Length: 182
Image (tube, rainbow, N blue to C red; front, side, top):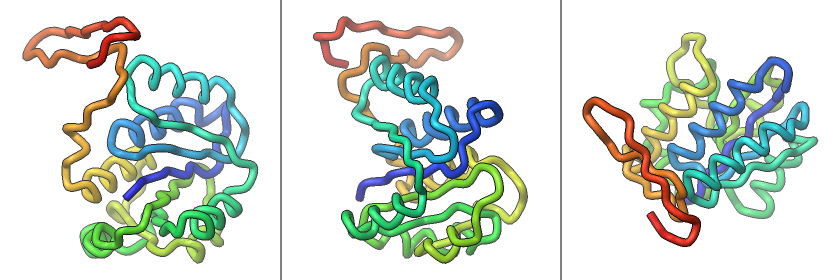
């Protein structure tokens, strides 16, 4: 099952850090790619490319000028299912098993500013990670952790130039030359 994240309504002047954190969380916690709509933001795209270059993996980020077309293409071309993360949905703990048991690729839709009502009707699952206000970054992280049952925490990112060497009390980062593998 491939996991792709669709970020709705990016506003570069207002959402730069949140969207960056959302995309980095998606990458680190098991998604293979992401798309964003709203305002095109070349610096966001460059930041994500730089992270992939330094920290490895094959994650990709794309821009779309129509989130509706992205959802339609996900269904029509990939046969995938759509999970919309919203505080108004069915509690995660009540629906995660059926999402996990469905073998199709998943498009995880997360909002920014006001999410259009149509997003709710286009989703196969509207899922809440609590019914309290919190960030889309935390909702995505909890959702991916539950979906992947913790397996994402041990992922190895091929082709990494940088790698953290876990330490109890200090920071250590190993830097490799481009031709060596971590």
